[in-house]
Image 1 (cartoon, rainbow over the protein chains, first blue to last red):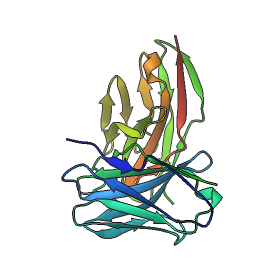
Image 2: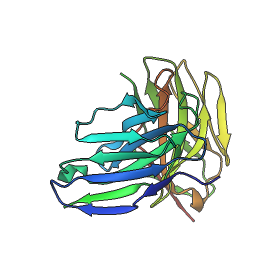
Image 3: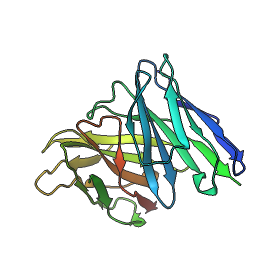
Image 4: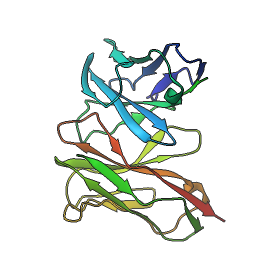
Length: 114
Length: 113
């Protein structure tokens, strides 16, 4: 099976712009979660989607949003970018998102905000 | 709240040394516990997991036992290799928040030949 794929792998944006990141889960997986990784804050949960519905949400401002499509592919959007949004954004998929389920991670999208 | 605390790194060991990375957790619910590893420039890979008390997860020579009485999930390996150099993350998921991993701050391991 192909793994989790994320596009693009690298992005450079300027403050105030918006950005959309894409995640394709492992075939058959219905749960997709997003995480932000920074040197200062570590790995932080953004949100989780299951069957096109947001099921869990982390403590991020409303500028961070996401969605999931009927084929389980997911996108996250960050509007009005700030310098502090520079990070590695990781997507993970799991079969049904239960607590015992394993989440499989993609390689991440490295976002740099100038 | 729910949280994970790991021993601070970096940890530097010689090849074939014994490895322990401490992990303790605080959870309001009944968690599943995970160890993930991140190699330079890559995403996270599951190393092992345990979903109930006294379970032992193991993979590639690494082991960790879910200790509910001490709220711990320490990672151990009897003989590390240079190829084990990476950042290791302990994480938990609460029973009714299945898609939400809560991570520790990560422990960087460097193994010297």
